[in-house]
Amino acid sequence: MCPEDTAVIFLDLGIVRDRLARIKNAFPDGSQHAVAIKTNPLMSILTFLAAEGVSLEAASFVEVKMALRALDGEGLRVVYDSPAKTQQEIDMLASQGQGMHINLNKLSELLLYENYQDIFSLGLRINPVIDSDAFGYLSVSNIDSKFGEYIGNKSSIIDAFYRYPALIGLHVHIGSSFLNFNASLRAIRSVLDLAQEINDKLGQKKVSIIDIGGGFPVNYKDEDDTFEISAYAQALEYECKELWSGQYKVITEFGRYVHANAGWAVSRIHSVFSNGENNTMVLHLGADMFLRACYNPGDWFHHMHIMTKDGILRDDESVLWNIGGPLCFGGDYIDMKRQLPKCQPEDLIIISDVGANTFSLWSKHCSRQFPKVIAYDSEALHDELRVIKERESVERAIEFWS
Ligand SMILES: Cc1ncc(COP(=O)(O)O)c(C=O)c1O
Image 1 (tube, protein in one colour):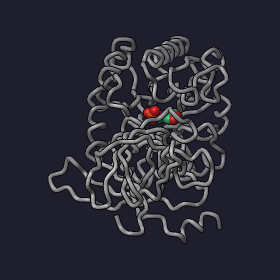
Image 2 (image 1 turned 135 degrees about the horizontal axis):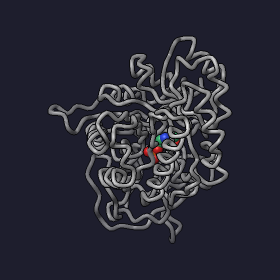
Image 3 (image 1 turned 180 degrees about the horizontal axis):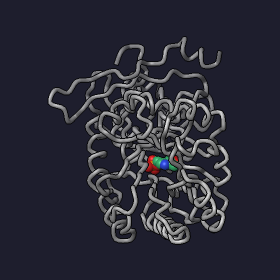
């Protein structure tokens, strides 16, 4: 770390490559694996994913542009999902003849594509109303969900497939980080049944793409039971055989599973103090990077270790620490009462499993500078460290507000 680096993020590309291989092995040959950009949107990482041969799932117009840049303009490797696409954005893509697969959030969105039936292939996101067992804010298939067309609107759905030639896919994603995959299996099963019903009613193979979304969880605590993605795929193969029959092209959109374990962060410990009862340390990373951990205490766990500034791991007497960040509000704690060794200012804290949905949710509150990001490849013969993003300069941080 350079003296000005108060914190640094490290990413291991070897782990990302391993997760991609596991996904490719688990699902049918010929599946299109579109990694969710929102999980880790660093341009170098998108370029790495593109070189590894996978597709990219974009959740906004800017993410579509990022995907196209990483994929050298290969629109057919972009899957565009967003609950708020605009006519201007779609017109812009169409005017560039930029074909790609777009999942509609609701049937009302069809109007955006009236004139572009020959440019895009379209899918319809379905809300099967099957709650996953993930934290409430990650479970997105209740009856009030803003995501997807309610599966009960059968006649409107079938009519849309009849009227719109480009509409050839169904999409489902009931939430992220399910604890058990039964709900996901049932959701995908219900969408396959709907596909069959549409095809039967129209007397043709109109639905030819099934996008099963992402959602596969990551084990942040080694002591928890977990399951492998191959087990999820095996259960799917049993419950949803059609996905393996060649009848449909299968799209997946995993995010967290690809990235979470590949990242770790280091922060200098800025200060430590005790009121006799509680010990607190203040870091240079807090709710700016760990939004979900800080705003939903207890939901997310990250292993932590402490080193001296010379890199010697501390394993002496441990105490309970409240781990505060650098922001100016009372909720800025990554964890409370965490057992860690005694430490002192200028020691370093290492925080594990930060590759997904941490820095990608970076908050501008208090205008802290985004840290430097360093990538390496633990699988490579000659493993070298590469800065893939410099620490945000003061000027660039000011520019955001200018
Ligand atoms: C439509 C869609 N697809 C894929 C994902 C990625 O989910 P996960 O990171 O849980 O795999 C998300 C996450 O929010 C999503 O909304």
